[in-house]
Length: 273
Image 1 (spheres, rainbow, N blue to C red):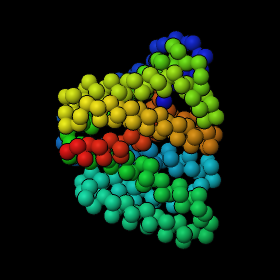
Image 2 (spheres, helix red, strand yellow):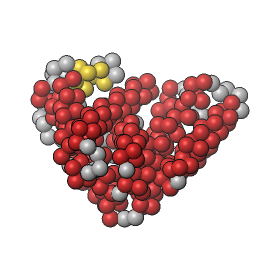
Image 3 (cartoon, rainbow, N blue to C red):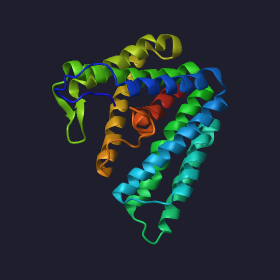
């Protein structure tokens, strides 16, 4: 997340590393979604899943919640693909993969409930949201998928600038001291405006009132996802999930809001269609 620390009044410009990283990554993501086939989006999601899985497993290891990574990664990759390619079978795949991971963990001599939960989250926290993104691209089209990404990105940016300019009250000081209530308000407003205005072209099947509610919901889920990942990092005693993306941290640091928002957005789009 981008929100500023309450009371911080530094320069408003993003660090150069953030800008350069965005200039490299955005064309790859947008170009894949817009110009290539839906299968390319699935391939991109699986690559992102791999890096996110590595970061997540490292965070879990730092907290002592180790789990068998090979079967967990396979289960996550299969679940992600199932959501994108055969959504009617996705629930069955999800349940099978989750139960299978639990059985593998039970077979470990030092397996604990925390480790079982950690391995299951590779599916629920990583694979399902990324698979939902692929399913949106497959069934609803490129505009609908990019709309979600724009909503989360603009909400995130609004939180940053709103927090820098007006932030006075910490939102969750025990988890992420940089986030402010004022920044969150700007994030909600941005989410609503993007869904209401851009959604008129890219999500025309949804009533304007529902688009307002959906915009606020996605912004709120984005904030919740950011706080959840901040809690993971604080528990693991690290600042960033990794240093893979200069100026941004790791893949999880960029995906945190989308991971919470994607399944809800997919459900609304599916019902609207």
